[in-house]
Image (cartoon, rainbow, N blue to C red; front, side, top):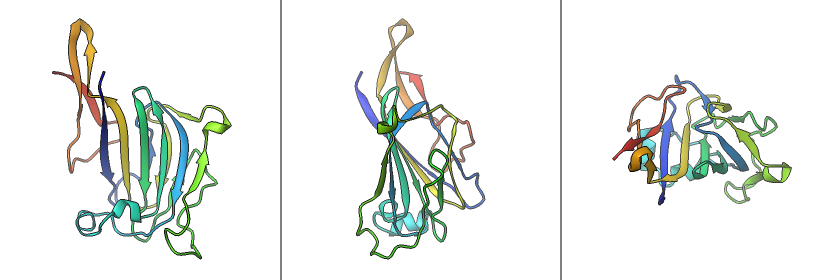
Length: 177
């Protein structure tokens, strides 16, 4: 089946639940930590600050799931930037830097060389923020796939822009076309 690349951006207000859960069963192969600024991540900032998500402090996890590539980016917010990663508790974000921002490469850890990577099950606690922040999820999935009885199903998001998402709620599903 032909695969597409899908993404969703989940903004967490200061009063929201600040834990990050695994969106699917997947194998995390690489973690990259980029030091950066701590601009606000609200709607106004998104409209006015160019390349906002790549300017801010962030931790990016890359790996594979049943349908292909998956990446999850935890992006720090104003005054906080503190991102905890439960699969790697020794990782410390939002540390003072002596060099200019963006002048050094990201701190990288490859989990694959330690075995098969870090396997997570759907719903496993992955990390947390210590205040409002944003999670960007990018994943590969079939645009459509054959279902029982030779009917095709296509992937569609269940949530839309501005929707509040609860823990355990599906972000998307396969629908008959």
